[in-house]
Image (cartoon, rainbow, N blue to C red; front, top):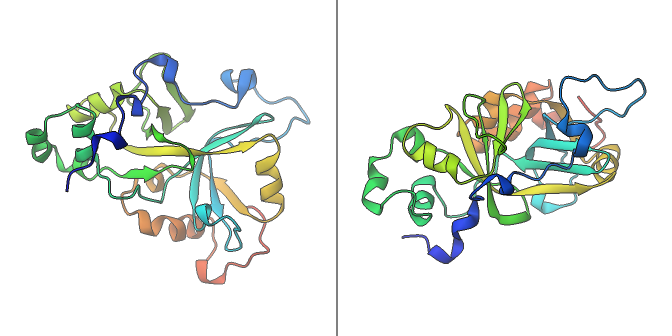
Length: 232
């Protein structure tokens, strides 16, 4: 059954650079190549958050979140292991008038199977694309880590549809956000594990295996995980 247009306004992804992804890192996050000052807090942008079994918020139960930005002002991340309900990439491209209905069946298999994720509860009607660094839009693409970028303009979907997009990508609707100090408090309360990100895990299409893979990647057997762990 087709997707109703009302679910996907044309500004699902922003049309221009003004719609660049939220960046709570502020001025400090905008600078690159500078080592943090001695005694400066350690921020986790570019890492994975993995929900502990005792996670009280059901929206984040068994979630794996790629942390796009983290600073004294707050944090922003994308859930990378939960699918958006009743939505696939070909239907989305049609509803956004990026391709015609008849062209949907002609999309390469890689695009047709590209995951559309439920990225988080904040701005759930807005799209964010995590992708490999081989694609860049000036003033719109945010390089988060060596292997992962974030772009939130519709031009990246247009490029993907014609085979000129990044080699690896996932589209997420919405994001997870934390106010100043909130994420730190949740980690201290054993709500989250954190560990370095693995691009292969983030871009993998097997969403149902990502949680266990993330845990095993940091040396934790899921069946043995307790609610008293700290960070990896």
